[in-house]
Length: 193
Image 1 (cartoon, rainbow, N blue to C red):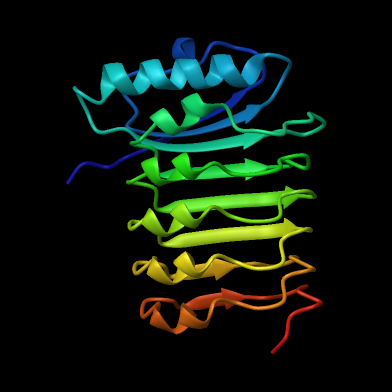
Image 2 (image 1 turned 45 degrees about the horizontal axis):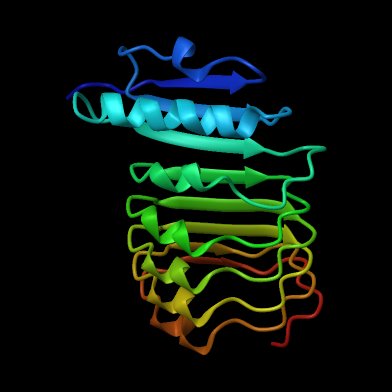
């Protein structure tokens, strides 16, 4: 069997396509958002998938860090990356909502949102992510409830809502998640047990 190696790329303001090569099948791309950078990064990713998906299987782990940037919405082109397997959004403090297009991530196995002050709810379409095994919603300070569609994530093994201070309850159908192994509620001060 072939051994896969991961290429870790940290982007500041470079063009992504100049940093990729065909010797790696696993990429972890970490983007630190700069002015006008989010759209260019996602454009490069879209080109990457449209070109390389026809030739080899790419396993892409994407982390976007919005540190010190007032990002209120996700660029729609992100949702064209339907082959994305892992997505991590960090420090999106001003993010108001996640659009329903999240259901386009049919191959997503790990989804993480870490540190957001204003995000109050997740879209109901999150229940369409049937390959999701890990969902981490960490330090989302304004979220009070999770959509009932979380109970449709039949492959989910890890649900981490640590630091969601205003989260009060979990959906009643959480018991339907037969594969769930880890549930983390640390720091959920308002949780009603």
